[in-house]
Length: 138
Image 1: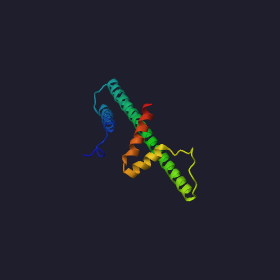
Image 2: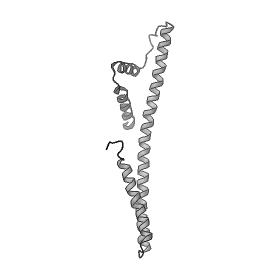
Image 3: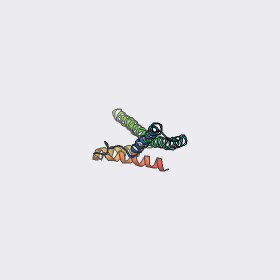
Image 4: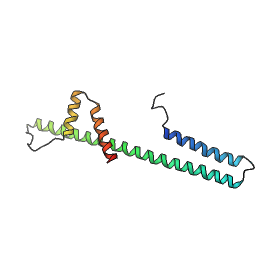
């Protein structure tokens, strides 16, 4: 079974706790002779565990989504910058306009171009991973 098809551990925890909570609800109401205080205690305990698990899962998912959104945003920014500088350089070349001496193209753009020439497709992903790691740790 591949890792993509296998359910995540956090989803399994939520599933198990949900089944526990629902089983607790059903059994406390269907089994006769159980004192009401025992029923309420069981529902309160399993309900508390259930709600805590759901909140934990939602916060975990939110953190993962924030990182995914930041990665997507950085990729979009890089693509726009790349297209901008590429068009700008092409236009200057077509119009035979010399590059300004103080004009600096971003070094990351040069690195990306060099990586494309060399066929290093993982370079950009590594740079994004480093940027995200800096963002999340710092």
